[in-house]
Amino acid sequence: MNTAAPAIPTATIHPLWLRITHWINALSVVIMILSGWRIYNASPIFPFSFPREWTLGGWLGGALQWHFAAMWLLALNGLAYLALNLLTGRARRKFFPLRPKEVARDMLLALKGRLQHASLADYNAVQKLAYLSVIADLALIVLSGLAIWKSVQLPFLREVMGGYDNARVVHFFAMSFLVLFIAVHVAMVAMVPRTLLAMLRGR
Image 1: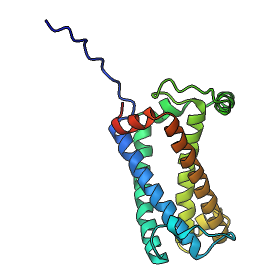
Image 2 (image 1 turned 120 degrees about the vertical axis):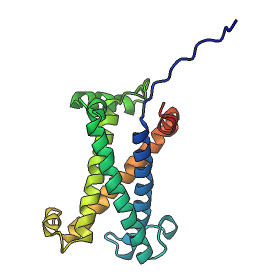
Image 3 (image 1 turned 180 degrees about the vertical axis):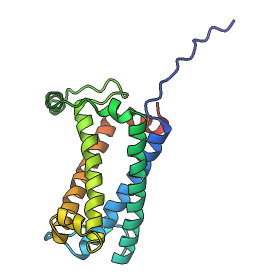
Image 4 (image 1 turned 90 degrees about the horizontal axis):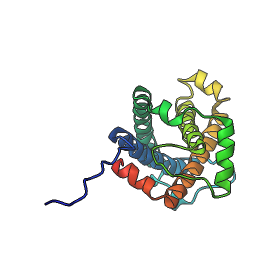
């Protein structure tokens, strides 16, 4: 007689397409940041440079090749990520509604160390705001990057950014926001390791 308990089905939290696009985005973002720091060092905007050992590409030409390769990967994969989120209805279910009152409440709880993360299937208001903000930031990074790269060919985009020099500043601060997001994101994953397992296994 078989007395083994029946297996309890485990719900899929992150579908395969989401996990694939997430990790491709992560790879392309890391490459873009590290190669971008090397490009920045060739013509700094502010009176500092990034340590050479933190950069990718070895020299300016190599860094540009890495940067452009990662840019196309990020742009194409990002479009696939957005399209699949919209077509499957995941964006609506996961990120909305987003109410300022709930953001303020969850932000206060987070600062007090009392914000609960009982279910990985649902995002709290702070997570919703953070993920929507980083999506908008990545779009700004791509657009400001195009305004720098194709300044003559895309005059409208260049002017929207306030000119070539200002586009570089926008690009820098958009990158800085992304680095801050990554730092907080990794810290949160370290605090709740099962979020990493869910993004690897889907459940």
